Length: 281
Image 1 (spheres, helix red, strand yellow):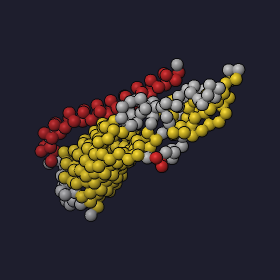
Image 2: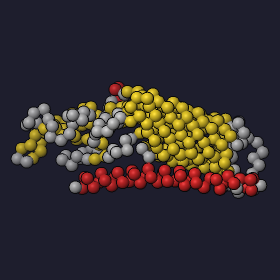
Image 3: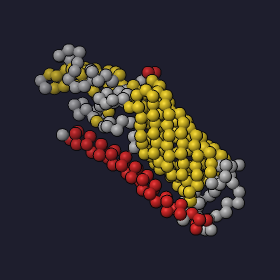
Image 4: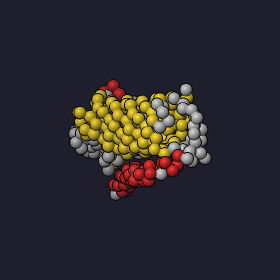
């Protein structure tokens, strides 16, 4: 009962995080018409930058509704109001319904995700534009830009490996014979299925993170994303920004992640990221 309760709490927390990011995105979207109408009035109160730093590069840490990721960007500022950027992202993409659990039949078990066929990692490479919406006031504050990006995806589906414990039961006492590292098979790896009625097997926990890399399957695809960037650095040659947006990763061939769910053609996520870098000539 305690295990089921922990799974429910985990799923509620995941859904709450996903809902909060999406709600934040739509809330920000709703207030921007007001910002745009106030732009002309605010221009008199903003800094004349004097010169434009033509190049910039940055790194970012990302938290999205199905996992996390990192990325880099670099590009050129065509004018103070528009720039063209290239980006590369690496992120983990989880299934919406996955939940981590422990097998309480063993001492010191390792956590694992039951039913997970593949761990999906996505590499993005794309190009995009940022457009100034609200300039930074003379006293500092926040500069707001809208953006859109698009490009190519490479999905890397790494098979899930688990430690499987083979055991016997004597006088209601569980005795582990040996533990084996095996690729997860939904037809074999669940409680009380073994090689014979007297030798039972059960999932002990997740395997090493590097297991399965030699069996990675590649899924090419496309992605697109858009949102808003809030830059708050006090120095013009430094980048400190928070970004909120929505991304879509689509694949022509469905990607299997969970054993008891249909493979997915697309993953839609909301995300929040922190960017830091520099501008230069």
